[in-house]
Amino acid sequence: MPVIIGALREGAPNETRVSLVPEVVDKFAASGAHVCIERGAGIIDGIETRQLAPAMTRVNAILDDVKDVTTRVKDDTERVDRAIHTTIDRIDDTAGRVSGMIRGARAIVEAVLRAA
Image (tube, rainbow, N blue to C red; front, top):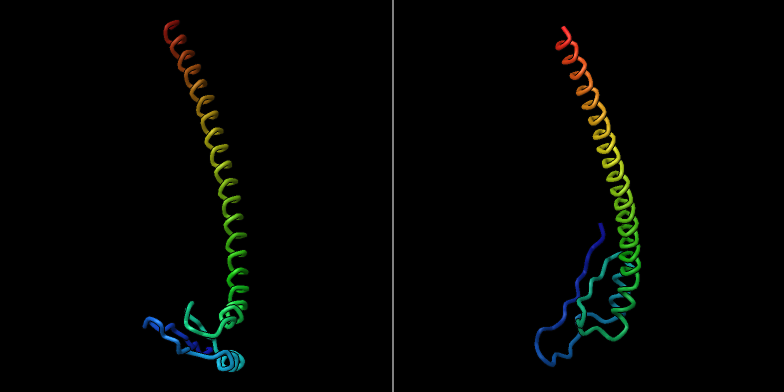
């Protein structure tokens, strides 16, 4: 498991010290450590962008995967919803036909009973 190193920004107003310099950040990263830099940490300009670029590439790839999965789930949900409604419609049609057959059978039985 890689080591995670954090570089925090100074809280005092007008603080000019930096928590890490780019050369040290590069050495940490080259050794396999993950360097997390708080925005505005006082690190020399450009280091945040250099360190964030690989992480942002990974984050964007993950977001693309999430978008793909979300689209597939939405499509599957719509397909299942259509199937459920089609099934309900078929049940309603069948119930209507059965109800009609029962009314017809009842009418026949009533007619036979009246004739008897």
